[in-house]
Image (tube, rainbow, N blue to C red; front, side, top):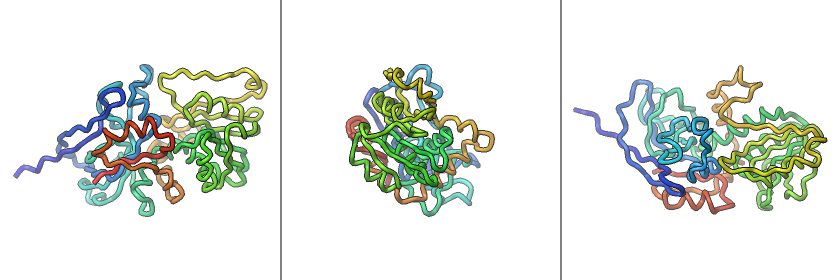
Length: 327
């Protein structure tokens, strides 16, 4: 008797500002393949907003591809890279385990067993869905070379900025300040053991500055926060947008070092010892901290994503982590 046909539903960007859910048939899995039923997937708001509006630059069409992406930029494309689910079939030792993978938004999917990262028992599935954001923050910390006692400023209190705040505040003796235009983000800084400042309140004495706001104003604030020979680590990705930044004034006399940090490559000093899989597993383990739960501000049933997600991505300034829920 033939095996029953397995189907799946996936979220696709089909035109600027428009999603749709598409159905497909899953192939018969190979011996080393896992069939995973999604529990939650996290929207990486900055990247996915650019994808939704077709703003991936021609030069970055390959670099921007997600590991399990289907379709091609600009449209139609299935994009995303933060999914947590239960293993329904595969090697017996993995059946019933909760795993994270760099898979797009889809209710049931198949991945090689090597692409699954086991979720620790003390990490809820929804929090585990933030793992790729944590991986970005961890890689930026390595790029910065931040250490105990450093004076650190984080400009931009989005998900990655708040994770950087938590990691930096965990350094012994570090003096860490989160900078954001929204005063309500101060509660996150306090929870992570950091200070908070509005852009006009920040001084220019930081040893290391991280910028995550994806705005020219934020980058200008970040450059102004760095002290003599400080490192300014730019994590924002602007897509096709031009970014006007003033590099006159004291930029040269302070000998600032502007560093681009992007998660696609492991930071150079760690690269010989840290393959991507080890870095992702470490990022996931760093989520064994319930203080990250409030970063999840919105939950959308997967079936409602085409209707509700565009507005949240575009027009909800207080949105942090947006989860799609399944079941």
